[in-house]
Length: 139
Image (cartoon, rainbow, N blue to C red):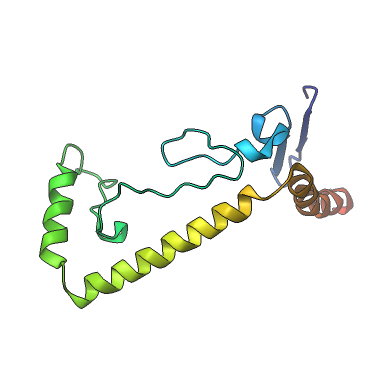
């Protein structure tokens, strides 16, 4: 293993735990929070998509299926939005999307408040029982 990296591998369970301390997120956890466009935010800053249309993302077309390459997703999503606007289903999906956005915002705010010590303590709480169990397992 390289310096600064804790790597524990077992052949029996194929459990691999990698703790990379050389990454920026471990040295400075306050810059680990990233915006939707992959730019790093300032410590404590939280971002939410502000230029998103009013349509719930839950109602958008999923183009991750076979044969869906090359479709004009913006046009299709606009058709879906205009066809379903005003319906009870659409209003319900808007409420669900708002609740989801609020939950994401609160989780990002909570994550931004974590210090390096909080992250390391939580990591150890998760990893130590696994390591103890692996050492006590009969091979």
